[in-house]
Amino acid sequence: MSLHTTLRRTAASTPKTPTTFICTQCRHATLLRRPKRPYTFTQLITLSDGSTFTHRTTSPLPIYRSTRDTRNSILWNPSSSKLRNVEEDEAGRLAAFRARFGRGWDANTPVEAGAGGDDKAKKDAEAAAVAAAAAEEEDDNLLDLISSFGQEEVTEKKKK
Amino acid sequence: MAATESSRYLARSLPRAIAPSARAQGLCWRRHASDQASTKPSSALSGLETEGSLNRTAAPEAAKSFDPAARSRLRKIQLPRSRYQFRSPKYDRGPLHPHQPPHPSDPSSRLFVPGPFSLPRVEQTYESTIASDILTLCYVHNPPGFKPPVKAPRLRSWDDSSPYHKNRSLRGPRGGDVLRLLRKPITFNNIPRLERITIHSYVKNAALENSSWIHVAGMAVQAISNVRVQTYKSKTSVATWGISPGRDTVALKAELRGENMEHFFGKLIDVVMPRIKDWPGVKGTSGDSSGNITFGLGPEHVALFPEIEVNYDMYPPKMIPGCHITIHTTATTDKDARLLLSAMGIPFYGKLVD
Image (tube, rainbow over all chains, first blue to last red; front, side, top):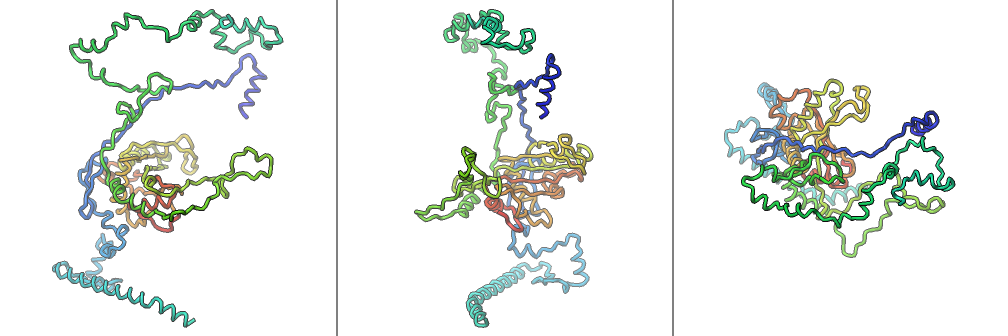
């Protein structure tokens, strides 16, 4: 719209000194910039379970030891019971509370409370026994489920 | 000779009926190149026509004296190193210029980026396990003789109820104007993989206060990504922050490809994501429905990157930016992209929208 009006105005008022829109194609030279790349070092990352891998990074540290990674976080290991029971107790408040009032207030009492880690073999054996018992229980539960599956339906139907 | 004669003279000589020149010659302000050239009798033009360039032979003396091998043999000491080296032109002067810069993949090019120098862990994992797993998961068995049902064409044709429908271009799909990407069945040669990662950060304080915010943000993003960032000016105006389009440089972007991308991705998943406190994962509804997944990291999460942590004091703590990370995959649907990313270790939560 504006273009049209300008053209008309120039044509009407000043035919002697017209202003035209000069659209000449021009191609300037473009500078070929050298790509800038930050300096990178090779870093060895040690995960919390001891596995390592190298990567290139801008950090000059040769070895990075991580304390928290995919190997010990619950989000990546949802089935790990060891990780699930870990309590966030950074300030030591829970420990202080327990020292004062005991563990009677815990919501889910752990299997071995306050063992201290003196006898590893005993603990391991206990843990194994607990695990075996749990597995057996689970097996039983599953068998119960399987055996009772059809019957429950039948009884429900009978009730109805 | 008609070519040497001026068109002005020609027009004058012709009768008025044939060549109507409304404007007087004195008022003719347009300059024609043909006019200018033809006013003076040009001997150069006539010379061009009589004698082609193919017939021309070089001067015999010059041809005899040109013997570069002999000249180099006569030389006592070598020329300086740069004389034996091809140097790319500094400027690209367009496709018609005789001196063309070499292709960027040529090591003598100014745009050449060497590499890759390492085989990243993510790449190895992908090649060894993830690719074949995805191929297995996405396998659809069709019995022999199976013919897939014929789908309606994506672009609908016009019913010829009106004569104006003739030669019209096809109509778009029903319900919307957007043509979604086609999902082809996944075979060995189109297994989804990472294509590139874009780290984007919008630093509003760069417009509110001063440019130091964007400098710090650029350094932080460069440190975590190994890639020089690009800055962008605002396209929209935000009245509450006093941002006007085209004036304020408010955003920056780093685009990672290849080796840098793999290293960044591995670092993000193995080191940074587990350290984010109370983080449920990436939201299941994210994604642009064509295979690109975006999620955001806050400033306190960006500070968890080992590169920033190692000299945390370098960055003013307030100025560490948050960023959006877009993972572009070659998958054409979000479902495939999510399958790939969850296989690589990104957790998703909530309702998964595919």
